[in-house]
Image (cartoon, rainbow, N blue to C red; front, side, top):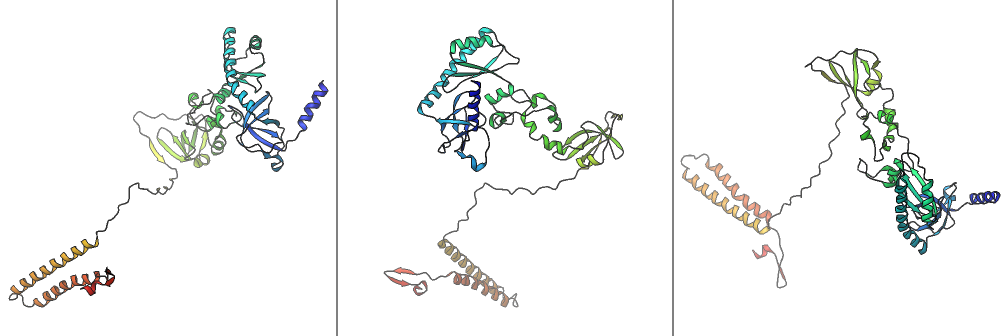
Length: 405
């Protein structure tokens, strides 16, 4: 029997499928690849696949891809078939069976007094096996629980214990950044997170602010850890004593993003660049620093490179543009005519005044006459420039404005 079983496993491993399809299961963070001989499978179709748990149903995340085109070499479980109406009906009915199994398992846990927190119950597609997922701080002896569940559910039963991080991945939620948890959204495996990553990023060692929904250190601490290690290489530790320009200081703050460090003693506070701290500062250990007297003010010195101010962003006004409305031509002509009349009256009035005062100022009469003549000619010139030839149709004949005059 063992030889035949091994031969069957070898024959299954030797099967090479020409096409691969990514399939996503319910409440799964990432899709899994399955092999098939069917190239007509398209994105969005439901398929029945064979897994380590048994037959399960999932949704295709993409079209079938030819393996030889991308040189893929991986052992793959097969896609049994495209889901039928019977498979879809069984898949929908399984949700009600899972709720019933979940309630039964909780009753037996409470009756036995076991310290375990049941999270989920999952049936295979053919309901030949049920999987119970639970959370517990320690190992639980559930042998008696398996006997009672087998007698009531009449199928294969599996109990799986998970940790806090797996629970957060299963349940999901919103992190302090305002986005969905990384483990739920895209992470396929958990990285090792240590408190040294927070120290490398010069963060305050407050476990409440550095912990995620699972109660463990946040996974995002690892994203920038390599960059901070590179930027802080060769720098003394925070709070250590250094000698800079003949004086002893203590490093009280370092801003890696601004490339600035703060050195402080009882007399001065100096802001220098990280390059100066790395090259010019000399670490000193065991030096007793003088305490600051009460009421004594420290001298603040900035020796960081002042960055050039970036050009201001263009201002975009949201106000509507103003539109200048031109008056009609008739009104312009009337205003020009009224201006011409006023100019004529003014010139006649000036002539009469000049005649009355001719006896007193005789030498200025010629200049005033020339001035008055120029004033009289201006409105006439304006009228000449404004006249236009306009054709008017009257009973089929064309007449210009000049001919009418």
